Image (spheres, rainbow, N blue to C red):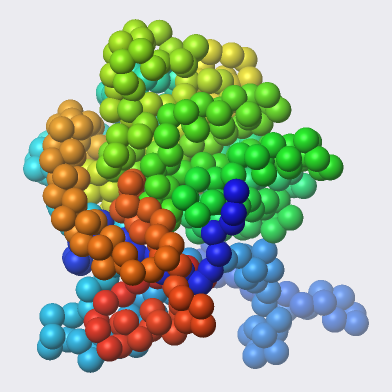
Length: 434
């Protein structure tokens, strides 16, 4: 399978032009006196420019990938004044939906702010029982997932960091496929180092290469691979992976005893229905869902599969920061994973914010049909972008999520073109080399 090459442009923006003291209170000293070592021992030091210049920052963080969204905002800010009187710059450079959260979610938050005496307190590390119970019901009905435990997180990004810290040691390998979601790569680089990152190829159809993965698993150093990451529908590929492919990936990781992280952030944006159950197609042996039952977006319940979900896109709760992880509770190994991940959860977030969980619970109750109606409105924008890019030889995406990638003609620099589009036309897209 051929690898998808740069330079490319990535377009998103949902295919539209848019735009009291507690038990954990810790006392801290009011001042700190720095010390330096002299020839005669340790002495008190004053804050001098020479000592401040020696203050270190982490080499691992400094060598971590820069987030492409931030890089694009820097380009946009350079030309923003030019477009102030012309309606501003239209950004196709970030996956943000144009609709607002469900009215019921905002109403629930307002009601809780007025009357909920527990809103300011910690909740269980894994999230409130009300939200987790609703999510378990949702996962069974909409994803075919059973026998799972839930950890509610501060967005899907924190969910992925939880997984990396729980599953990977120094020297282990985690696989992602290029073009990748940049925050996944950043999480691996920042927490485990560049040596733990193993990047695989994706074909020009936007499908990650499982033949390459098998070769890596069977080759020298294959035993170091502990985790494989897939995003479906793809960010930034914009491709919905078919059920048959996902089952092959699940089986391959099972064969080699490797964890498979499925980032399902864009589960509601499977535009072609590539991942839904059809009649008689259920083959997930661990699921008791009847073979003629249809679910909108299938996910594997296997013990080695960890599923990540988000409220940021479909329900437009990006600022509320709510995601969640579903981990099988069917075996001792998956139960151990859940228990160990709670240590990570307590260290990073302690617990998700109660007010955000209230908005999430109300959104779950609003249901998938509310989301589907909004997602349907993106069809016109998606078709317009695909049509505009049609003269190019290679286009990736449009079947899932809210992204399209296109290979530029030979000799064109993607970064220079992206800058020119902002400066001359007031339209922002992401260079594929970002």
